[in-house]
Length: 168
Length: 274
Image (cartoon, rainbow over all chains, first blue to last red; front, side, top):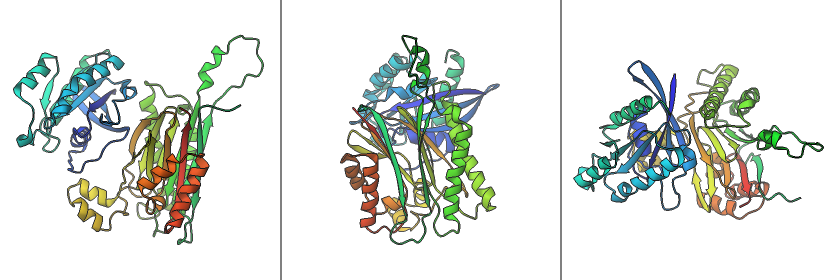
Protein backbone atom coordinates (compact mmCIF):
# COMPACT_ATOMS: atom_id res chain seq x y z
CA UNK A 1 0.00 0.00 0.00
CA UNK A 2 1.18 3.51 -0.75
CA UNK A 3 1.98 5.53 2.36
CA UNK A 4 2.22 9.32 2.31
CA UNK A 5 3.02 11.81 5.03
CA UNK A 6 1.14 15.09 5.16
CA UNK A 7 2.12 17.88 7.54
CA UNK A 8 -0.46 20.37 8.77
CA UNK A 9 1.12 23.81 8.92
CA UNK A 10 -0.27 27.09 10.18
CA UNK A 11 -0.46 29.48 13.08
CA UNK A 12 -1.89 28.42 16.43
CA UNK A 13 -5.66 28.19 16.70
CA UNK A 14 -6.35 27.99 12.97
CA UNK A 15 -8.08 24.61 13.29
CA UNK A 16 -5.45 22.13 12.11
CA UNK A 17 -6.35 19.57 14.77
CA UNK A 18 -10.08 20.08 14.14
CA UNK A 19 -9.66 19.56 10.40
CA UNK A 20 -7.91 16.22 11.01
CA UNK A 21 -10.55 15.24 13.54
CA UNK A 22 -13.32 16.04 11.09
CA UNK A 23 -11.54 14.23 8.24
CA UNK A 24 -10.59 11.10 10.21
CA UNK A 25 -13.39 10.76 12.77
CA UNK A 26 -16.16 13.00 11.33
CA UNK A 27 -16.27 14.83 14.65
CA UNK A 28 -15.90 18.39 15.83
CA UNK A 29 -15.40 19.95 19.23
CA UNK A 30 -15.56 23.62 20.17
CA UNK A 31 -13.04 23.05 22.92
CA UNK A 32 -9.64 24.39 21.98
CA UNK A 33 -6.54 22.38 22.82
CA UNK A 34 -3.21 23.89 22.02
CA UNK A 35 -1.12 21.16 20.37
CA UNK A 36 2.35 20.32 21.61
CA UNK A 37 4.89 18.74 19.29
CA UNK A 38 3.20 16.50 16.75
CA UNK A 39 0.16 14.27 17.00
CA UNK A 40 -0.08 11.57 14.38
CA UNK A 41 -3.28 10.17 12.88
CA UNK A 42 -3.91 7.91 9.92
CA UNK A 43 -6.58 7.68 7.29
CA UNK A 44 -6.89 5.35 4.33
CA UNK A 45 -8.27 6.89 1.16
CA UNK A 46 -9.11 5.34 -2.18
CA UNK A 47 -8.13 7.21 -5.28
CA UNK A 48 -9.11 5.31 -8.40
CA UNK A 49 -7.35 1.96 -8.15
CA UNK A 50 -4.93 3.14 -5.53
CA UNK A 51 -5.34 2.86 -1.79
CA UNK A 52 -3.29 5.41 0.05
CA UNK A 53 -2.50 5.40 3.75
CA UNK A 54 -2.27 9.05 4.74
CA UNK A 55 -0.12 9.78 7.77
CA UNK A 56 -1.37 13.06 9.10
CA UNK A 57 1.15 14.99 11.19
CA UNK A 58 -0.58 17.66 13.20
CA UNK A 59 2.19 20.15 13.97
CA UNK A 60 1.89 22.56 16.87
CA UNK A 61 0.90 25.94 15.51
CA UNK A 62 3.36 28.77 15.20
CA UNK A 63 2.87 31.26 18.02
CA UNK A 64 4.71 34.03 19.85
CA UNK A 65 6.90 31.49 21.63
CA UNK A 66 7.52 28.86 18.97
CA UNK A 67 8.46 29.10 15.33
CA UNK A 68 7.58 26.41 12.84
CA UNK A 69 9.82 23.48 13.73
CA UNK A 70 10.98 22.51 10.28
CA UNK A 71 12.61 19.25 11.42
CA UNK A 72 9.13 17.73 11.56
CA UNK A 73 8.63 18.36 7.84
CA UNK A 74 11.28 15.95 6.61
CA UNK A 75 9.80 13.08 4.64
CA UNK A 76 6.56 14.91 3.88
CA UNK A 77 4.93 14.12 0.57
CA UNK A 78 2.50 17.00 0.90
CA UNK A 79 1.78 20.09 2.96
CA UNK A 80 -1.63 21.17 4.21
CA UNK A 81 -1.49 24.85 5.15
CA UNK A 82 -4.26 26.25 7.30
CA UNK A 83 -5.29 29.85 7.93
CA UNK A 84 -8.17 31.07 10.05
CA UNK A 85 -10.37 33.17 7.77
CA UNK A 86 -11.43 35.26 10.74
CA UNK A 87 -7.84 36.14 11.71
CA UNK A 88 -6.05 38.22 9.14
CA UNK A 89 -2.56 37.60 10.60
CA UNK A 90 -2.91 33.84 10.11
CA UNK A 91 -3.41 34.54 6.40
CA UNK A 92 -0.47 36.96 6.28
CA UNK A 93 1.85 34.26 7.65
CA UNK A 94 1.11 31.77 4.88
CA UNK A 95 3.74 32.98 2.45
CA UNK A 96 6.51 32.92 5.04
CA UNK A 97 5.47 29.45 6.23
CA UNK A 98 5.53 28.16 2.65
CA UNK A 99 8.98 29.67 2.11
CA UNK A 100 10.31 28.02 5.27
CA UNK A 101 8.77 24.67 4.39
CA UNK A 102 10.11 24.64 0.85
CA UNK A 103 13.53 25.66 2.09
CA UNK A 104 13.51 22.50 4.23
CA UNK A 105 11.92 19.85 2.03
CA UNK A 106 11.76 21.35 -1.45
CA UNK A 107 8.74 21.79 -3.63
CA UNK A 108 6.03 19.26 -2.73
CA UNK A 109 2.30 19.41 -3.47
CA UNK A 110 0.39 21.65 -1.10
CA UNK A 111 -3.02 23.08 -0.45
CA UNK A 112 -4.29 25.89 1.73
CA UNK A 113 -7.51 25.75 3.70
CA UNK A 114 -9.09 29.04 4.73
CA UNK A 115 -10.80 27.56 7.72
CA UNK A 116 -13.77 28.53 9.93
CA UNK A 117 -15.88 29.36 6.88
CA UNK A 118 -18.98 28.85 9.03
CA UNK A 119 -18.13 32.08 10.90
CA UNK A 120 -19.31 34.30 8.06
CA UNK A 121 -19.95 37.37 10.24
CA UNK A 122 -16.38 37.39 11.45
CA UNK A 123 -14.79 36.63 8.08
CA UNK A 124 -11.79 38.91 7.61
CA UNK A 125 -10.64 38.06 4.09
CA UNK A 126 -11.58 39.80 0.82
CA UNK A 127 -11.71 38.64 -2.77
CA UNK A 128 -8.31 40.20 -3.40
CA UNK A 129 -6.83 37.93 -0.75
CA UNK A 130 -8.00 34.82 -2.61
CA UNK A 131 -6.70 36.33 -5.83
CA UNK A 132 -3.30 36.94 -4.24
CA UNK A 133 -3.09 33.30 -3.22
CA UNK A 134 -4.16 31.82 -6.54
CA UNK A 135 -1.82 34.18 -8.37
CA UNK A 136 0.98 32.81 -6.18
CA UNK A 137 0.05 29.23 -7.21
CA UNK A 138 -1.79 28.20 -4.06
CA UNK A 139 -4.69 25.79 -4.41
CA UNK A 140 -7.22 27.46 -2.12
CA UNK A 141 -10.29 25.96 -0.44
CA UNK A 142 -12.69 27.42 2.09
CA UNK A 143 -13.24 24.88 4.82
CA UNK A 144 -15.24 24.49 7.99
CA UNK A 145 -14.02 21.86 10.42
CA UNK A 146 -17.29 22.42 12.23
CA UNK A 147 -19.70 21.64 9.39
CA UNK A 148 -17.26 19.54 7.37
CA UNK A 149 -17.62 21.75 4.32
CA UNK A 150 -14.61 21.52 2.03
CA UNK A 151 -12.65 19.27 4.40
CA UNK A 152 -12.70 15.99 2.48
CA UNK A 153 -12.29 17.88 -0.75
CA UNK A 154 -9.09 19.52 0.49
CA UNK A 155 -7.50 16.32 1.77
CA UNK A 156 -8.50 14.30 -1.30
CA UNK A 157 -7.23 16.99 -3.66
CA UNK A 158 -3.85 16.97 -1.90
CA UNK A 159 -3.72 13.16 -1.83
CA UNK A 160 -4.35 13.04 -5.58
CA UNK A 161 -1.63 15.60 -6.23
CA UNK A 162 0.82 13.57 -4.13
CA UNK A 163 0.06 10.44 -6.11
CA UNK A 164 0.67 12.32 -9.34
CA UNK A 165 3.91 13.68 -7.96
CA UNK A 166 5.91 10.45 -8.01
CA UNK A 167 9.05 12.12 -6.75
CA UNK A 168 7.57 12.24 -3.25
CA UNK B 1 35.98 14.05 32.72
CA UNK B 2 32.85 16.23 32.87
CA UNK B 3 30.25 15.58 30.25
CA UNK B 4 28.91 18.79 28.74
CA UNK B 5 25.78 17.27 27.28
CA UNK B 6 24.04 14.21 28.56
CA UNK B 7 20.62 12.79 29.33
CA UNK B 8 20.09 12.41 33.06
CA UNK B 9 17.22 10.09 33.96
CA UNK B 10 15.47 8.92 37.07
CA UNK B 11 12.17 7.43 38.14
CA UNK B 12 10.46 6.59 41.40
CA UNK B 13 7.14 5.62 42.87
CA UNK B 14 5.54 6.07 46.29
CA UNK B 15 2.45 4.46 47.74
CA UNK B 16 1.23 7.80 49.14
CA UNK B 17 -0.30 8.47 52.53
CA UNK B 18 -3.75 6.94 52.18
CA UNK B 19 -3.66 3.80 50.05
CA UNK B 20 -2.35 0.50 51.34
CA UNK B 21 -1.00 -0.76 48.06
CA UNK B 22 0.86 0.85 45.23
CA UNK B 23 -0.78 0.06 41.89
CA UNK B 24 1.58 2.28 39.90
CA UNK B 25 4.55 0.96 37.96
CA UNK B 26 7.33 2.67 36.07
CA UNK B 27 10.36 1.95 33.95
CA UNK B 28 13.32 4.13 33.07
CA UNK B 29 15.77 2.37 30.78
CA UNK B 30 18.54 3.05 28.34
CA UNK B 31 19.26 0.92 25.30
CA UNK B 32 22.75 1.14 23.90
CA UNK B 33 24.53 -0.45 21.02
CA UNK B 34 28.05 0.72 21.26
CA UNK B 35 31.53 -0.29 20.22
CA UNK B 36 34.35 0.83 22.46
CA UNK B 37 37.71 0.94 20.71
CA UNK B 38 40.50 1.31 23.25
CA UNK B 39 43.22 0.24 20.81
CA UNK B 40 43.44 0.50 17.05
CA UNK B 41 46.01 1.15 14.36
CA UNK B 42 43.43 3.04 12.30
CA UNK B 43 44.01 6.77 12.46
CA UNK B 44 40.36 7.68 12.29
CA UNK B 45 37.36 5.89 13.77
CA UNK B 46 35.10 7.15 11.00
CA UNK B 47 34.33 3.55 10.08
CA UNK B 48 32.55 3.11 13.37
CA UNK B 49 30.54 6.31 13.44
CA UNK B 50 27.36 4.40 12.73
CA UNK B 51 27.35 3.20 16.30
CA UNK B 52 28.23 6.51 17.89
CA UNK B 53 24.77 7.91 18.57
CA UNK B 54 23.04 4.60 19.09
CA UNK B 55 21.20 5.23 22.30
CA UNK B 56 17.55 5.18 23.21
CA UNK B 57 16.07 6.22 26.53
CA UNK B 58 12.77 4.66 27.51
CA UNK B 59 10.36 6.10 30.05
CA UNK B 60 7.14 4.35 31.05
CA UNK B 61 4.56 5.04 33.74
CA UNK B 62 1.46 2.95 34.34
CA UNK B 63 -1.31 3.45 36.88
CA UNK B 64 -3.41 0.39 37.68
CA UNK B 65 -7.04 1.38 37.82
CA UNK B 66 -8.16 1.84 41.40
CA UNK B 67 -11.27 0.11 42.65
CA UNK B 68 -10.81 -2.85 40.34
CA UNK B 69 -9.12 -5.90 41.86
CA UNK B 70 -5.76 -6.53 40.28
CA UNK B 71 -4.86 -2.97 39.29
CA UNK B 72 -1.36 -3.61 40.59
CA UNK B 73 -1.04 -6.72 38.42
CA UNK B 74 -2.46 -4.98 35.37
CA UNK B 75 0.10 -2.17 35.51
CA UNK B 76 2.89 -4.66 36.22
CA UNK B 77 1.85 -6.96 33.40
CA UNK B 78 1.55 -4.01 31.05
CA UNK B 79 5.05 -2.71 31.74
CA UNK B 80 6.52 -6.24 31.56
CA UNK B 81 4.73 -6.92 28.26
CA UNK B 82 6.04 -3.65 26.91
CA UNK B 83 9.60 -4.55 27.90
CA UNK B 84 9.20 -7.96 26.22
CA UNK B 85 7.94 -6.38 23.03
CA UNK B 86 10.65 -3.74 22.93
CA UNK B 87 13.32 -6.36 23.64
CA UNK B 88 12.14 -8.32 20.63
CA UNK B 89 12.13 -5.28 18.38
CA UNK B 90 15.33 -3.70 19.62
CA UNK B 91 16.69 -3.17 16.15
CA UNK B 92 14.12 -0.42 15.70
CA UNK B 93 15.28 1.56 18.66
CA UNK B 94 18.83 2.50 17.89
CA UNK B 95 18.42 4.63 14.85
CA UNK B 96 15.36 5.99 13.17
CA UNK B 97 15.66 7.73 9.84
CA UNK B 98 12.96 9.49 7.86
CA UNK B 99 12.23 6.43 5.73
CA UNK B 100 11.94 4.07 8.66
CA UNK B 101 10.19 6.43 11.03
CA UNK B 102 6.65 5.33 10.32
CA UNK B 103 7.58 1.68 10.72
CA UNK B 104 9.01 2.56 14.07
CA UNK B 105 5.86 4.45 15.04
CA UNK B 106 3.80 1.45 13.91
CA UNK B 107 5.91 -0.71 16.21
CA UNK B 108 5.17 1.59 19.13
CA UNK B 109 1.45 1.33 18.51
CA UNK B 110 1.71 -2.45 18.12
CA UNK B 111 3.59 -2.58 21.41
CA UNK B 112 0.62 -0.97 23.11
CA UNK B 113 -1.89 -3.38 21.56
CA UNK B 114 0.39 -6.29 22.43
CA UNK B 115 0.37 -5.02 26.01
CA UNK B 116 -3.40 -4.63 25.97
CA UNK B 117 -3.84 -8.18 24.67
CA UNK B 118 -1.45 -9.56 27.27
CA UNK B 119 -3.37 -7.92 30.12
CA UNK B 120 -6.66 -9.28 28.80
CA UNK B 121 -5.22 -12.76 28.27
CA UNK B 122 -3.59 -12.80 31.66
CA UNK B 123 -6.78 -12.06 33.53
CA UNK B 124 -9.35 -13.41 31.08
CA UNK B 125 -11.13 -10.17 31.66
CA UNK B 126 -12.55 -9.31 28.24
CA UNK B 127 -12.72 -5.71 29.25
CA UNK B 128 -14.23 -6.14 32.69
CA UNK B 129 -11.17 -6.86 34.81
CA UNK B 130 -7.99 -5.10 35.74
CA UNK B 131 -6.94 -2.15 33.67
CA UNK B 132 -4.15 0.37 33.62
CA UNK B 133 -3.03 3.61 32.07
CA UNK B 134 0.19 3.50 30.07
CA UNK B 135 2.32 6.38 28.92
CA UNK B 136 5.62 5.72 27.19
CA UNK B 137 8.27 7.91 25.66
CA UNK B 138 11.21 6.59 23.67
CA UNK B 139 13.85 9.26 23.27
CA UNK B 140 16.23 8.84 20.37
CA UNK B 141 17.92 12.19 20.51
CA UNK B 142 16.61 14.68 19.70
CA UNK B 143 13.24 13.08 18.97
CA UNK B 144 10.93 11.81 21.69
CA UNK B 145 8.29 9.36 20.45
CA UNK B 146 5.21 9.10 22.62
CA UNK B 147 2.41 6.57 23.02
CA UNK B 148 -0.29 7.28 25.54
CA UNK B 149 -3.37 5.54 26.92
CA UNK B 150 -5.36 6.86 29.88
CA UNK B 151 -4.88 9.82 32.20
CA UNK B 152 -1.27 9.64 33.26
CA UNK B 153 0.56 12.62 31.85
CA UNK B 154 3.58 13.73 29.91
CA UNK B 155 5.06 17.21 30.30
CA UNK B 156 7.73 19.03 28.36
CA UNK B 157 9.72 21.91 29.82
CA UNK B 158 11.28 23.99 27.08
CA UNK B 159 12.90 27.37 27.66
CA UNK B 160 10.99 27.93 30.87
CA UNK B 161 7.62 26.97 29.42
CA UNK B 162 5.92 23.82 30.71
CA UNK B 163 3.38 22.14 28.46
CA UNK B 164 1.41 18.94 28.79
CA UNK B 165 1.94 16.92 25.62
CA UNK B 166 -0.55 14.18 26.44
CA UNK B 167 -4.29 14.64 26.66
CA UNK B 168 -6.19 13.01 29.48
CA UNK B 169 -8.31 10.21 28.01
CA UNK B 170 -11.11 10.59 30.55
CA UNK B 171 -14.88 10.49 30.22
CA UNK B 172 -15.16 14.18 31.08
CA UNK B 173 -12.78 15.12 28.25
CA UNK B 174 -14.69 12.80 25.95
CA UNK B 175 -18.06 14.32 26.89
CA UNK B 176 -16.77 17.80 26.11
CA UNK B 177 -15.18 16.64 22.87
CA UNK B 178 -18.42 15.00 21.81
CA UNK B 179 -20.35 18.14 22.64
CA UNK B 180 -22.45 16.29 25.24
CA UNK B 181 -21.30 18.52 28.12
CA UNK B 182 -19.90 21.98 28.54
CA UNK B 183 -16.53 22.27 30.26
CA UNK B 184 -18.15 23.40 33.51
CA UNK B 185 -20.68 20.55 33.39
CA UNK B 186 -17.83 18.11 32.80
CA UNK B 187 -15.91 19.51 35.77
CA UNK B 188 -18.91 18.93 38.04
CA UNK B 189 -19.78 15.54 36.59
CA UNK B 190 -17.27 13.51 38.59
CA UNK B 191 -16.13 11.92 35.34
CA UNK B 192 -12.70 13.48 35.31
CA UNK B 193 -11.12 10.35 36.79
CA UNK B 194 -13.18 7.82 34.82
CA UNK B 195 -11.03 6.56 31.98
CA UNK B 196 -12.32 6.62 28.42
CA UNK B 197 -9.39 4.53 27.27
CA UNK B 198 -7.26 2.06 29.23
CA UNK B 199 -5.03 -0.95 28.69
CA UNK B 200 -7.07 -4.07 29.41
CA UNK B 201 -10.42 -2.45 28.69
CA UNK B 202 -10.57 -0.35 25.55
CA UNK B 203 -7.19 0.96 24.49
CA UNK B 204 -7.19 3.88 22.09
CA UNK B 205 -3.54 4.88 21.92
CA UNK B 206 -2.62 8.39 21.04
CA UNK B 207 0.67 8.74 19.19
CA UNK B 208 2.91 11.73 18.84
CA UNK B 209 6.41 13.05 18.95
CA UNK B 210 8.49 16.00 20.07
CA UNK B 211 11.92 17.28 19.13
CA UNK B 212 13.92 18.25 22.20
CA UNK B 213 16.73 20.71 22.71
CA UNK B 214 19.55 20.59 25.23
CA UNK B 215 18.24 22.15 28.42
CA UNK B 216 14.77 20.61 28.03
CA UNK B 217 13.15 18.30 30.56
CA UNK B 218 10.59 15.54 30.09
CA UNK B 219 8.32 14.40 32.90
CA UNK B 220 5.94 11.45 32.91
CA UNK B 221 3.71 11.08 35.94
CA UNK B 222 0.61 9.41 37.26
CA UNK B 223 -2.33 11.40 38.58
CA UNK B 224 -1.14 10.93 42.15
CA UNK B 225 1.18 13.84 41.39
CA UNK B 226 -1.20 16.09 39.49
CA UNK B 227 -4.03 15.71 42.02
CA UNK B 228 -1.90 17.73 44.42
CA UNK B 229 0.71 19.60 42.43
CA UNK B 230 -0.40 22.18 39.87
CA UNK B 231 1.27 22.71 36.54
CA UNK B 232 2.71 25.97 37.87
CA UNK B 233 4.26 24.19 40.85
CA UNK B 234 5.59 21.39 38.62
CA UNK B 235 7.17 23.98 36.36
CA UNK B 236 8.85 25.71 39.31
CA UNK B 237 10.27 22.44 40.61
CA UNK B 238 11.58 21.39 37.20
CA UNK B 239 13.25 24.76 36.73
CA UNK B 240 14.98 24.80 40.09
CA UNK B 241 17.78 22.73 38.64
CA UNK B 242 19.45 19.73 40.18
CA UNK B 243 19.66 16.19 38.96
CA UNK B 244 16.78 14.13 37.61
CA UNK B 245 16.79 12.25 40.90
CA UNK B 246 16.55 15.43 42.95
CA UNK B 247 13.69 16.67 40.78
CA UNK B 248 11.80 13.39 41.16
CA UNK B 249 12.20 13.39 44.92
CA UNK B 250 11.02 16.97 45.20
CA UNK B 251 7.96 16.30 43.06
CA UNK B 252 6.99 13.26 45.11
CA UNK B 253 7.64 15.00 48.42
CA UNK B 254 5.51 17.96 47.35
CA UNK B 255 2.61 15.64 46.49
CA UNK B 256 3.03 13.89 49.85
CA UNK B 257 3.13 17.20 51.73
CA UNK B 258 -0.12 18.19 50.06
CA UNK B 259 -2.02 15.06 50.99
CA UNK B 260 -0.65 12.06 49.07
CA UNK B 261 -4.15 10.66 48.51
CA UNK B 262 -3.04 8.40 45.68
CA UNK B 263 0.03 6.49 44.58
CA UNK B 264 2.60 8.88 43.10
CA UNK B 265 4.92 7.99 40.25
CA UNK B 266 7.30 10.18 38.29
CA UNK B 267 9.90 9.59 35.59
CA UNK B 268 12.18 12.42 34.52
CA UNK B 269 14.63 12.88 31.67
CA UNK B 270 16.78 16.01 31.74
CA UNK B 271 18.80 16.96 28.70
CA UNK B 272 21.67 18.69 30.47
CA UNK B 273 23.64 21.20 28.46
CA UNK B 274 23.11 24.23 26.27
